[in-house]
Image (cartoon, rainbow, N blue to C red; front, side, top):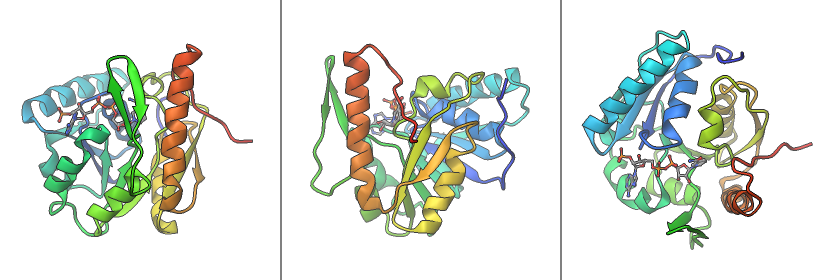
Length: 229
Ligand SMILES: NC(=O)c1ccc[n+]([C@@H]2O[C@H](COP(=O)([O-])OP(=O)(O)OC[C@H]3O[C@@H](n4cnc5c(N)ncnc54)[C@H](OP(=O)(O)O)[C@@H]3O)[C@@H](O)[C@H]2O)c1
């Protein structure tokens, strides 16, 4: 079993809305790699309960690390890296709350796919700004923003015993930010980060992810991802 990632220079990573589907398995993966990880939420009780569950998971995987928790605006205060694991519908309100709490130079990661779920139907939201990641960059000018992890499903991330043999595109306005995003992605065993260039390319990845989700539904193949060759 390949559970532990290669050890790297540890960071403090805050997952905003880290209580849903995507946040918890990412938190475990990054804690296993040796980072300090914090679960953020709009509710301190919910953050605590999820962090306690994840600490039990880590223990069962043979890892003594402890994941911390707090309100979204508290955990970002302490973070070198902030990951926005929230649905698109909550973005503007969340960024408004976090705007003055995120330190200059923080790496902010957007895996957000601009979709809305209406009953069982999934719809792509077309954005005037181009992409979700560009909205984030505009609202948080002090941050370095990267768009990545859209195409890795929470189900695959939560299967800690199974390596994820997929490629992941990382877009970002600056090469240094993209490099940091690529290091973060590759802390998940066997995921390969691919430099996707400027943040203006992020809309292509966001829309492609919508296509993957739609194809997964039509073809009854959930968790579709891709490998470039
Ligand atoms: N799920 C996947 O497989 C997957 C894969 C790739 C990318 N993504 C992207 O990752 C993001 C998170 O996905 P997810 O499936 O984890 O989402 P989710 O489970 O629906 O929501 C994650 C958390 O976001 C917070 N939240 C919900 N509505 C909110 C609102 N209106 N305002 C502020 N916070 C809100 C909630 O935390 P609190 O109630 O604790 O605040 C919730 O637990 C999405 O943008 C999605 O497109 C998901």
